[in-house]
Image (cartoon, rainbow, N blue to C red; front, side):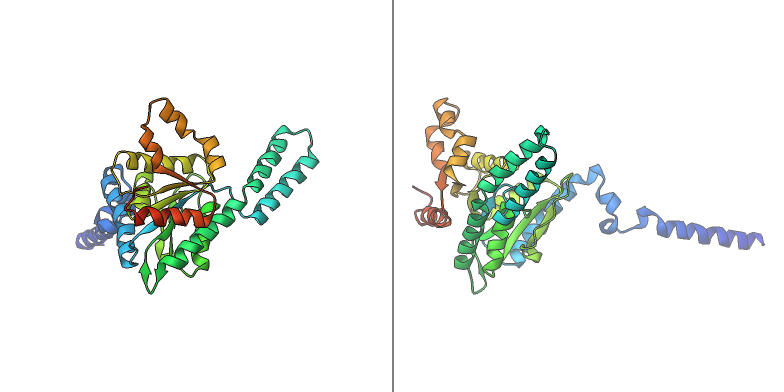
Length: 288
């Protein structure tokens, strides 16, 4: 091989390395580059813009947000889980953890009505508010199982659109199958997800749930308390549950919130009552 041939071979090999180098890749196609810590501001902007543009394309003018626990499943599923827990306990009756699992499964079954009522509420709202292509009061959930699934399912059964805002978690959360495909999103940043929950919201209905549900509730309450978001009714569904979990009157009595802040919260015991509260709130311009 001549020196010219060697030079040509060397340059050809170098050209291949150039073409394969990550730096040559278009920035928009370079996933490793986009995931660098320095690119966090860009990723935040993308998580803001992507759902916003899709909402506009789908003509989503306003939403009603439904929060609730992932463990509050349909009665059939709750009964199946309880039966499974009881079988395991019967095989190891001295195992206190299995006894605890049975007790917890019994409590979940006792709240199975909330799945049905979340479904009925979403079906009611969706059947009334999505007609002739107009998309108001579109149901928005976190896109997961439990109460979220029930609400998306209610909209689905009404033949209406609904939104699911999934979040990447250590234990993968898959979207439930009732979400409108063009309106199902996956977020990395909780803050951006929370923002999209509330940007177009006309109401927030909070069914029984755990840490995540309470976190989302207090995010909305704080924004309403400080006047940093639009006026919406915040409805706690199931007074007995919520008054045991959160004693808002105690906060007012202790002087850490104002008495008038108690008016930010409503309670409902049926799908129709929740919908009536929402309608009345907006009919009176947000006054009670």
